[in-house]
Amino acid sequence: MSIAQPIKAEAAGRPMTVQILKSKAETALAEAFADNEARLPGGDWLRQLRRAAIGAFTAEGLPHRRVEEWKFTDVRALMREAFPVALDANLPKPAALDALVRNALPGADLTEAFALFIDGRGAAQSGLSAISELDGAFLSQFVDHPPAWLETEVSDVSGHVGEATLALNTALFTDGAVIDIEKGREIETPIALIFADADKGARTVVTRNVVRVGAGAKIVLVECHLASEAARQANTLTQIVLGDGAEVVHVKLVASRAGSVHLGRTVARLGANASYRPFQLVSGDGLVRNDLSVTFRGQHSTFDLGAAALANRQGHFDTTLVVDHAVPHCTSRELVKYVLADKGRAVFQGKVIVRPDAQKTDGKQMAQALMLSPDAEFDSKPELEIYADDVVCGHGSTSAEIDPELIFYLRSRGIPLDEAQAMLVESFIGEAIDKAEPEAIQNALRGIARAWLAGEAHIKQG
Image (cartoon, rainbow, N blue to C red; front, top):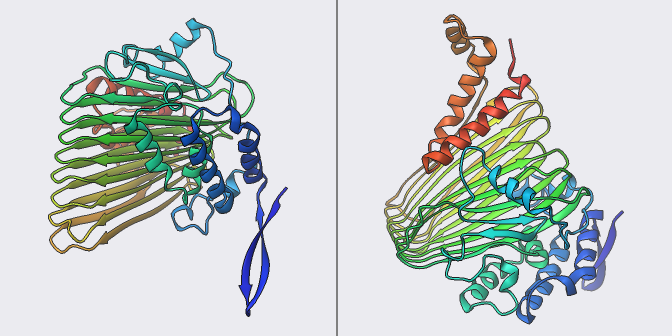
């Protein structure tokens, strides 16, 4: 089902009306906002932003292949219908909530400082009041009368309503985490944001996280999106503001299932002498897109991304990033590894922008795919947009199958075929996982990769 939206235009000096067809999903999302606007959290300031955002989304619609940044991930075609928006979460019993936190990242303890969300609603939190300057970690607690800085951050990102998925997030987000770290604090305990589900029906879940890290502060942020029991269409945004000299390690995990959609975006802004080191791991099936937008606002700062994606069946995993070197003397690194089985598809789009005044920029990116099936597909589009002349920048992209000579070498030493292939795949993605911190979390990530490999009979190629 589609609806036609009239738009006035001019042709040969005469006004005419052009009918733009809206998909069933686009229509349902617009109607969901109209039906539930009064139930969404936020004061008058946020209601105005939400209305502007849904207007922009209605005009733009879901991203499609004619939008350059989405040419390989046609959400309009892949998302034929929209699930009902989750507004009231059916919370599991406390014991089940505790189990979700304990098992969110097997091998790593995330129980000391966490916020747990069930279908887009805050369900439990612990240890964050002693870490954050705010008394509580749920965004819905503060959006009626937010601190000035929080309103500024939410409004600033919401101003970019021309991007449809971001506009939709602004219009429909129900909750999320808000964390404010005082300058100079060094938090050794990982701060965990855990997103899970409880409702057995298919749902749309929209969340937003805002994290401000003061000058000289250091944190490890772990963002876990657990595999859902029923299909989910998730739209999540994490905003991170790093003060001068701040250091942030940000680990994001997405476990996806068939029929689900995860549209995730991270927006990071770095002050001077700051360090932002994200790592992302995606595994499973379904559609997952992780967008990163990183802007250097102060000199002598570093962005170092590691990412790995393990796709099986018909998994479609997209990593798209824009790194904006707006000031001189900054360094950016991106290493993305994909392992593709069955009809898995991976997309990498990496744009590095070097502004005219951003001399002494050092930027490098690499995307690599290991193809475990002749039906797998890898689309890579690295870009450098350089307007300065004193820079060191480069990019690369490769794809390959498992080397049969390496298989022969390992088998000749008595290693079974399955084990030999798994060893080579683990070695391939290990270079990216090495970027993850701290060691306990890095080891837990290796465990997830091994578990995926153990379940993949498709690796067998003879």
